[in-house]
Length: 250
Image (cartoon, rainbow, N blue to C red):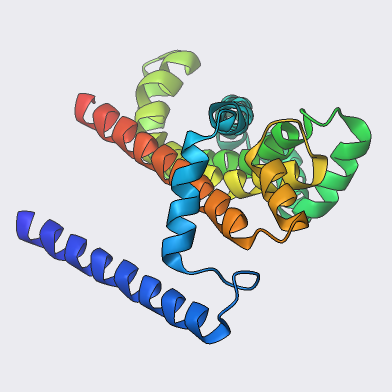
């Protein structure tokens, strides 16, 4: 197992080095910071961002919006997902809503949100709508994969529905919940940044990306993108660690 892990790390490192090499070659070909700055310039710009006085406020505001959107989508997604998985009539009612939200272009949702909400609430609303279908759908799939014989046996012994949900459904759908949460965070994070780019709250990664783009500071645009990717990756690790702890505990 350890050898496989080490091998995968080597492959990942090689992949990153190849991408950096391609980036460097293309930047040399174009030889213009306005089109594609070199990796080393972008790296220095990224480091410089960490030292700016408003950096914590900028990333903190974006992270806060993401967390609020995630919590709302997680709670509602799990609750409605469990109910829809158990009750086929409610699932028939909820399905077209989920399909509509999932199929609607993010840009359309943002444009509507700009009319309905204040600028600080737009990314939160977009995060919620983007993440909710992933979590809810995964929970429904998890409920449908539960052993129905086990559920029927519990009902024969007159075990309450609440206890069946707690003791039978929840343990079975835990992997589905975390899978949905991981996918939701990946898509939701991008939607938050897009929401910030268009809504322009005072602090936010998307706001400063848009400002950098306005002044043709391509190195800063890429640097902020790197920061956003790192934060997204950090949340991915946190979700996986929590999943591992819960699975081990169970």
